[in-house]
Image 1 (cartoon, rainbow, N blue to C red):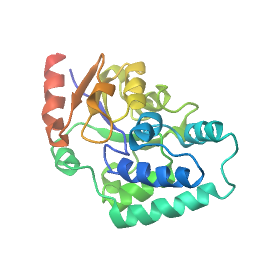
Image 2: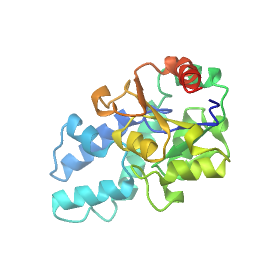
Image 3: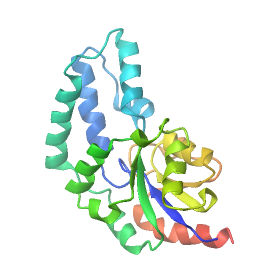
Length: 219
C-alpha cells in the first residue's frame, strides 16, 4: 500500500508544548479556585479545542472565565514558548527520514501553530500544508479536520496515516478511516491510545520504520 499522506498533530507530536500548557493552564485555573492535578488536566484537556476547554472550565466554575482570560493566557504561553519550547524528542530525525508526503492538522489555531512551529524551526517543513480545526465545522474527535487535509492535498483517506498523542486525535483518525500511530512518549499513557487501527509507540525515532512496516503489511 502506498502511503499517500502522513498527517501530524502539532502539540505533543511535533512541538513539546503539552507539558508547558498543562503547567500554565493548571496554575491559571488554581488562581481561579479550580485546582486540578496534572493527571486530571491531561485526561480532560490534552488534545481538545479552546472552545471545549472554555466550556468545561466555565461549567465547573459555575461562572464565565474573566474577560481578559485569552490575553492573559496568550502572554503566559508566549513567554513559556519563547523560553522553553523545543521540538518533541526525536521528531527532527524522524522527519528527516520520512519521504512520504506530509502535513500538520491540529485543533490549535493557525496563529498558535505559526508561533510554535516557528520557534522550533519546523514551520518551513510544512509551509502551505498546515490545517487547523478552525478551518472546519468540528474539531477532533470528529474526523472533519483529517478528511479536510486529505481532500486539500488530494489523498485517499484510506491511504492516509495520522500521528497523534491524544485519545481525541486517535479517535478522529479512526473515524476518518485512517490508521493512527499513537505517540505515548509524552503525557498521555499508552493505555489511553490503544485500540483498533492503532499502533502505539514511545520513541519518535522509531516512526519511519513503523510507517514502512505498516506500508508493507497493508500490501
